[in-house]
Image (spheres, rainbow over the protein chains, first blue to last red):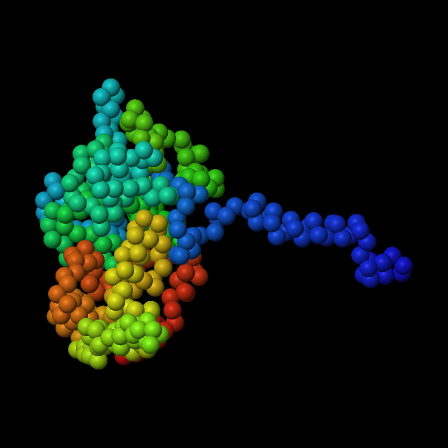
Length: 250
Length: 152
């Protein structure tokens, strides 16, 4: 009885210290230990370098003749052509590579590689070509003057120029004549909390699940799981561009 | 007397502002109905919106493109969502067409707007599938109510 009244009635020095330290830990220390990147970005928040979006592509699963990713990209961003394949916009395309020594043919989707050191941004005279804090390389079409230096600088031919007047643009993907454009990792979807790009969704549904997209800084993300499973490599490593899109199986 | 001299310019400004707005006393009339017609005021007080709407849009545009901020308060997409009218059949009328919201003032002030060579002039959303339920539900309730009123 005596000890009980002591416990509830008055607090001794030891209790006081233990309780106050644990209260401080709850308020200040534990929130810092729990990873903040797990929570989805709020719409009012600016993007930060805590996330680094990246993509991993398993070429061994990619099927020749499938164009689900291209179709999905066109639907998502409202892209359409004018029957001129040389100049029609393409944000993602399928290419065929043949190994010169073994004659092995591999088919793979080619899109903006979202380099850490993007040559398109180096050459842009207006700063319209830029790298967002979270690593997405995109075009600010408000300041793009359509000089197409970036298209020449890109070693992957990832960018397109809009040559004609456009109609029926989507609200989520404004685009127009006289600007350069390219894959932006479905920036609108991502900012609204989606964890999938349009091409990845389509590939998982209709293709072979070739594409894995996610946060490279988050050790539990899809892209890191895919990289762990089958480590890949960057294309043209000699250029030292540090692309965030990696390929395995070539 | 010195006090009167000092306050005179202020009084002058106070009187003159109400007469120098280009659309003072005019009432906008639209062919169709828009959500904005049914609301008391815009996202800011009306006189602020008349003078400063492009500043809000410029600021928001850079925030969105460069920093990925996707709030709708000052976004062009939200302007269009709310101010776009519908014809008798219920289809959206492009907002920059003759007699529509943007056109009415911009033709009078002879300021050419270039927004709609790239941006959609009617709400044309593809489905944005979101993982975050809270963000989906945060679309203001009034928008949904008005959507129902108009579509009926």
